[in-house]
Amino acid sequence: MWTYVIAFTEDLTRFMMVRSKKRGGWEMPGGRGLEDESPIDTSKREFKEETGHELIVKEEWNTHLGKGLVHFGFIGNGDEKNRMTDEIIEIDLFSELPEDLAYPDEEYRPFIELGRSMLPSNRKS
Image 1 (cartoon, helix red, strand yellow):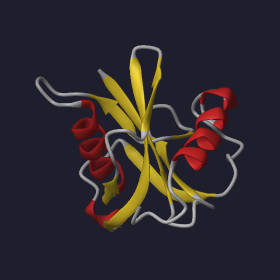
Image 2 (tube, one colour):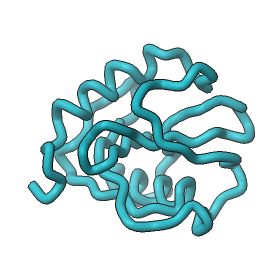
Image 3 (tube, helix red, strand yellow):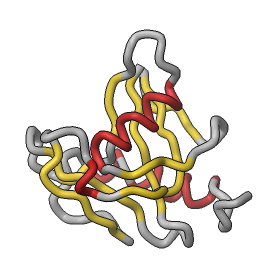
């Protein structure tokens, strides 16, 4: 199963996106699961590999998208310098979707709003 992650700052005003070398545009971190890896573990691993940051997430903070899963969470400790892949050429925080997306706007916009409504306004909840 594939997963992708929409990870927010603690105040839910900004979210992290990555620029893919392969696709050229901005997208959410994510990828395919390894054999016997749970979807939440896939999201945590992919987020760490692509951004260098931990992902703060709970099992119930998700929704299905086709044959995959979108996990919502918070950006945890880390540093872009700790990325474990060269597939990502840039990482940034956004309050609105940027112009140059890897996939159509409708692939992201409804899920950003769903994540903001699903996550607690205080990540310690």
